[in-house]
Length: 180
Image (cartoon, rainbow, N blue to C red):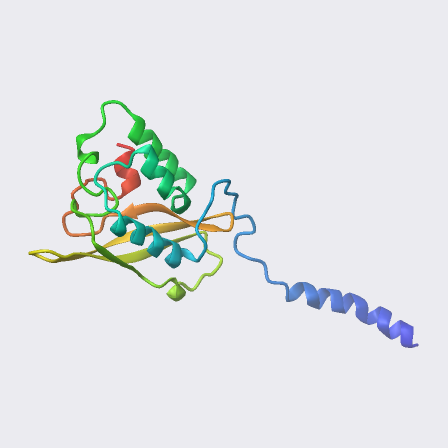
Protein backbone atom coordinates (compact mmCIF):
# COMPACT_ATOMS: atom_id res chain seq x y z
CA UNK A 1 0.00 0.00 0.00
CA UNK A 2 2.82 2.34 0.90
CA UNK A 3 4.54 1.68 -2.46
CA UNK A 4 1.31 2.30 -4.36
CA UNK A 5 0.97 5.76 -2.76
CA UNK A 6 4.56 6.66 -3.66
CA UNK A 7 4.07 5.40 -7.21
CA UNK A 8 0.91 7.48 -7.54
CA UNK A 9 2.63 10.64 -6.25
CA UNK A 10 5.74 10.35 -8.47
CA UNK A 11 4.08 11.67 -11.67
CA UNK A 12 2.51 14.50 -9.67
CA UNK A 13 5.92 15.45 -8.22
CA UNK A 14 7.46 15.49 -11.71
CA UNK A 15 4.63 17.68 -12.99
CA UNK A 16 5.07 20.16 -10.12
CA UNK A 17 8.83 20.35 -10.56
CA UNK A 18 8.35 21.21 -14.23
CA UNK A 19 6.07 24.09 -13.22
CA UNK A 20 8.64 25.67 -10.93
CA UNK A 21 11.60 25.58 -13.32
CA UNK A 22 12.70 29.07 -14.32
CA UNK A 23 14.09 29.51 -17.82
CA UNK A 24 16.13 32.60 -18.73
CA UNK A 25 14.82 34.82 -21.51
CA UNK A 26 17.93 34.02 -23.56
CA UNK A 27 19.59 30.66 -23.06
CA UNK A 28 22.46 31.33 -25.45
CA UNK A 29 24.20 34.65 -25.05
CA UNK A 30 26.71 33.84 -27.76
CA UNK A 31 30.43 33.54 -27.49
CA UNK A 32 33.33 35.91 -27.26
CA UNK A 33 36.82 34.91 -28.24
CA UNK A 34 38.61 38.11 -27.25
CA UNK A 35 39.35 39.29 -23.69
CA UNK A 36 36.75 41.21 -21.78
CA UNK A 37 36.36 43.41 -18.74
CA UNK A 38 34.83 41.99 -15.55
CA UNK A 39 31.56 43.44 -14.29
CA UNK A 40 28.01 44.26 -15.21
CA UNK A 41 26.98 46.63 -17.99
CA UNK A 42 27.27 49.81 -15.92
CA UNK A 43 30.67 48.82 -14.48
CA UNK A 44 32.13 48.01 -17.90
CA UNK A 45 30.73 51.22 -19.41
CA UNK A 46 32.17 53.29 -16.54
CA UNK A 47 35.58 51.66 -16.97
CA UNK A 48 35.45 52.44 -20.71
CA UNK A 49 34.67 56.11 -20.04
CA UNK A 50 37.35 56.26 -17.33
CA UNK A 51 39.87 55.05 -19.92
CA UNK A 52 38.58 57.57 -22.47
CA UNK A 53 38.71 60.53 -20.08
CA UNK A 54 42.08 59.46 -18.66
CA UNK A 55 43.62 59.20 -22.13
CA UNK A 56 41.58 61.46 -24.43
CA UNK A 57 42.06 61.18 -28.19
CA UNK A 58 40.54 62.80 -31.25
CA UNK A 59 39.22 61.15 -34.40
CA UNK A 60 39.22 57.49 -35.28
CA UNK A 61 41.49 55.42 -33.06
CA UNK A 62 44.55 53.87 -34.69
CA UNK A 63 45.28 50.13 -34.45
CA UNK A 64 47.32 50.54 -31.24
CA UNK A 65 44.55 52.46 -29.48
CA UNK A 66 41.91 50.06 -30.80
CA UNK A 67 43.85 47.20 -29.23
CA UNK A 68 43.60 49.03 -25.89
CA UNK A 69 39.83 49.50 -26.35
CA UNK A 70 39.26 45.92 -27.55
CA UNK A 71 38.20 44.39 -24.19
CA UNK A 72 35.48 47.05 -23.86
CA UNK A 73 34.06 46.90 -27.41
CA UNK A 74 31.63 44.44 -28.94
CA UNK A 75 32.92 42.35 -31.81
CA UNK A 76 30.66 44.26 -34.22
CA UNK A 77 31.76 47.73 -33.10
CA UNK A 78 35.42 46.72 -33.00
CA UNK A 79 35.30 45.37 -36.56
CA UNK A 80 33.46 48.48 -37.80
CA UNK A 81 36.05 50.78 -36.17
CA UNK A 82 38.91 48.67 -37.53
CA UNK A 83 37.49 48.85 -41.04
CA UNK A 84 36.80 52.60 -40.82
CA UNK A 85 40.29 53.38 -39.50
CA UNK A 86 41.93 51.40 -42.29
CA UNK A 87 39.93 52.80 -45.20
CA UNK A 88 41.49 55.13 -47.74
CA UNK A 89 39.68 58.40 -48.36
CA UNK A 90 38.61 58.67 -44.75
CA UNK A 91 35.74 60.92 -43.86
CA UNK A 92 37.27 64.21 -42.59
CA UNK A 93 34.54 64.52 -39.93
CA UNK A 94 35.75 61.25 -38.40
CA UNK A 95 39.34 62.47 -38.22
CA UNK A 96 38.59 65.39 -35.90
CA UNK A 97 36.81 65.53 -32.59
CA UNK A 98 35.79 62.83 -30.16
CA UNK A 99 33.83 60.17 -32.05
CA UNK A 100 32.75 58.58 -28.75
CA UNK A 101 30.67 61.58 -27.62
CA UNK A 102 28.31 64.25 -28.95
CA UNK A 103 30.74 67.13 -28.47
CA UNK A 104 33.97 67.48 -30.48
CA UNK A 105 36.21 68.26 -27.47
CA UNK A 106 34.93 65.17 -25.66
CA UNK A 107 34.38 64.84 -21.92
CA UNK A 108 36.89 65.12 -19.12
CA UNK A 109 34.52 63.35 -16.72
CA UNK A 110 31.75 60.79 -17.15
CA UNK A 111 29.21 59.12 -14.91
CA UNK A 112 27.30 56.08 -16.17
CA UNK A 113 23.77 55.46 -14.85
CA UNK A 114 23.35 52.50 -12.53
CA UNK A 115 22.04 49.38 -14.32
CA UNK A 116 20.40 48.07 -11.14
CA UNK A 117 17.28 49.99 -12.14
CA UNK A 118 16.95 47.77 -15.24
CA UNK A 119 14.22 45.24 -14.36
CA UNK A 120 15.21 42.46 -16.81
CA UNK A 121 18.34 40.71 -15.61
CA UNK A 122 18.24 38.34 -18.61
CA UNK A 123 18.58 41.19 -21.08
CA UNK A 124 21.07 40.86 -23.91
CA UNK A 125 21.33 44.60 -24.47
CA UNK A 126 20.88 47.55 -22.16
CA UNK A 127 20.99 51.25 -23.03
CA UNK A 128 22.52 53.35 -20.25
CA UNK A 129 22.55 57.13 -19.88
CA UNK A 130 25.95 58.71 -19.45
CA UNK A 131 26.29 62.15 -17.88
CA UNK A 132 29.31 63.82 -19.45
CA UNK A 133 31.02 67.10 -18.69
CA UNK A 134 33.91 69.20 -19.86
CA UNK A 135 35.48 71.78 -17.57
CA UNK A 136 37.23 74.90 -18.74
CA UNK A 137 36.44 78.56 -19.24
CA UNK A 138 32.90 77.56 -20.25
CA UNK A 139 31.98 74.29 -18.51
CA UNK A 140 29.64 72.09 -20.54
CA UNK A 141 27.41 69.21 -19.44
CA UNK A 142 25.48 66.82 -21.67
CA UNK A 143 24.16 63.28 -21.85
CA UNK A 144 24.76 60.53 -24.35
CA UNK A 145 23.60 56.94 -24.30
CA UNK A 146 25.82 53.86 -24.42
CA UNK A 147 24.34 50.60 -25.68
CA UNK A 148 25.78 47.64 -23.81
CA UNK A 149 25.44 44.10 -25.20
CA UNK A 150 26.18 40.75 -23.68
CA UNK A 151 28.64 38.60 -25.62
CA UNK A 152 29.07 35.28 -23.88
CA UNK A 153 29.57 36.20 -20.24
CA UNK A 154 30.97 39.67 -21.06
CA UNK A 155 29.25 43.03 -21.27
CA UNK A 156 30.61 45.25 -24.05
CA UNK A 157 30.01 48.67 -25.62
CA UNK A 158 28.09 48.13 -28.85
CA UNK A 159 27.15 51.68 -29.81
CA UNK A 160 27.02 55.25 -28.57
CA UNK A 161 23.98 57.36 -29.30
CA UNK A 162 24.61 61.08 -29.60
CA UNK A 163 21.76 62.64 -27.64
CA UNK A 164 22.98 66.18 -26.95
CA UNK A 165 21.22 69.19 -28.48
CA UNK A 166 23.66 69.59 -31.39
CA UNK A 167 26.03 66.64 -31.85
CA UNK A 168 29.12 67.37 -33.91
CA UNK A 169 28.70 64.16 -35.94
CA UNK A 170 25.52 63.47 -37.85
CA UNK A 171 23.88 60.06 -38.02
CA UNK A 172 22.52 59.77 -34.50
CA UNK A 173 24.99 57.16 -33.29
CA UNK A 174 28.60 56.07 -33.68
CA UNK A 175 27.67 52.94 -35.66
CA UNK A 176 25.41 54.83 -38.05
CA UNK A 177 28.10 57.45 -38.61
CA UNK A 178 30.78 54.84 -39.28
CA UNK A 179 28.57 53.07 -41.83
CA UNK A 180 28.01 56.22 -43.91
